[in-house]
Image (cartoon, rainbow, N blue to C red; front, side, top):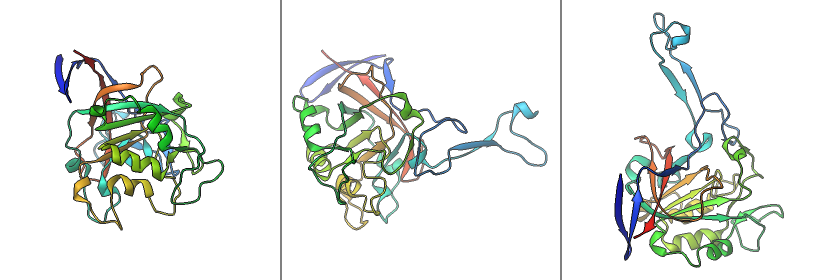
Length: 266
């Protein structure tokens, strides 16, 4: 199916049969990425006295129970309810169906920019300077979504076990700049926009959603952060149409499947 859409003042052609999935397939009981060393996502056949939900064990069908921690077991999308006292669900927050988005590739680095905690000499961060340089010639009509791929980029991200010192994160200046750009949907290929151990401050989460002391900011209710995506090296930086798919979970986060469609100016 093909379509012509208008973004800003320009028209674009899209082939909806050609898309790229940015999610990491979640292999229950198999190799999968992990943050904070939580239990891996698992599944097991349901059993009772008269039934087993596994055809290999003589059951009539496969009928399994799944256990996972969305924030830690793979690609997930979260809403402002992740950091507020008021319970807000991703099901109510993710209301944008198709999102004009830009993909950029960055190299996390050491910096003189700041974070809420003192940066260590080996902290590799995403900086405002790097983002600015990548977006210098970008059409701002495609900044409702910002997709960030970091290098080095290899398939180890599909199963990487992240510890406190192995994951990049954003500086305060970088996240403030993202907010100034008007980005509503931020996607990254690492497990958190904040340092994994930051004394519970969640500094960059709070900057993105413009929250204070766990209080709900209604103006940011429709904004989302998607973490632990994977963007293969054959996908070029540039403009895309983004669609973020989630199950209808009434929870602050859910496993997600962000997909991007190529756009070609008419």
